[in-house]
Image (cartoon, rainbow, N blue to C red):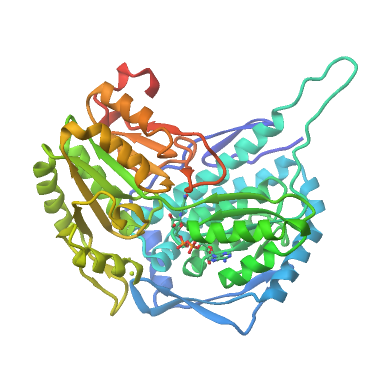
Length: 524
Ligand code: NAD
């Protein structure tokens, strides 16, 4: 019989189910305990370089390929010293993981879930400030951006994953008089490679954690630019009871890691979040190595986006402006779901433009750079493009890019098609009567299909956009910004080349922004 400790954000109902709620987002008001704890954690990191080893076979290992993670807003601060695992060490990690697989996979799901629930409680309480501070200093996030990522989202991932895993176990086939049937949910036979991006602390923890929860053994390759926070998450999992060899912590040069894991006969899964080119490269390598494998590897890839806000002439201007600014420029536009294409009707454009420019000027420039600089050059030199605000950048102390709004006369200019992953928003102003053509344009301009939003107050317009753009986004928002999905409320994922695993489209809306919400059964 499994006994669960009662945590802060979850409650044991019976052996196969727990009740889970989303982690509250703290406000860090002056005088609040969370603010004091965070200030203390930030002070402890000041000028400090943490030494982060590879962790293979349960041991801390150093190689001669030493690297540093620099704070993006102050290059002089080396926040972490780490080393790259070479091919031999990666192979050692594979062997250690595979050797640990059987015992871990045979553990009851309740025991495995307990570890992740405990880690969530540690993150929710005593370790919250440490992880927030490491995410802020290492990945250049503001307090609130760190809070919604490294605290709220990661805690939610661990708790909801545990809940869903337990419920899955409860789903069993029919038993009849002559036979008792049971479904055994077992881990994959081999190891899973978890490869995480720089921009979300929560994603790394989830990419490595979710397969482990389901009975798999994992090699986790964190991003060089998120080492400090990734290692903190790893330590917390170990302290919460994760046995040493279930997740091997393997910082490495991307291609060296990719080449080594995809050429192992034991490779059985890839849990990847990052750019399309990296995922395509890995996919090709897997197909080239198919004859080596003991299983057909499962490949899951959450990739980039070229997300849109489509504004109809019936839209509420202030809602469009607020949502677009937040989506395009929060965290310097470095969210996969950030809005980077705005389609505005000619009649509303003067009002939208005036407010957008006024509000953009108030944004305090943080950090966030060579790739973005290239796009700024393109915007300055292309005859189709005019920069309405912003356009400068500076990397003398850290990576600073001014939020930039560009107007394009050509809806097929590369700036409307390719992912930039920085604070650049491009606007295409269309004549109202060509709304249908704009729907088609949005649908066909890029190969991506991650997120998108429509802003309108007319029901038929929303329905038309929703049906025409059915495959243009995984997460589709109505009168709300294209970013900000919450675990278990708006499960995140794309379509087309933005995601490999799921193909369903989700309809999301934020009722306060939706004037006719109650009339729409689709929103309930
Ligand atoms: P990236 O593709 O450059 O790197 C992702 C990870 O892959 C890193 O750990 C990197 O070291 C590793 N890598 C690089 N080459 C590799 C190889 N050959 N083999 C194995 N691993 C390799 O992406 P990034 O710059 O870290 O992150 C930004 C990208 O991630 C953007 O495209 C963004 O849209 C996407 N992203 C998507 C989501 C989503 O949920 N869809 C979420 C966050 C980020």
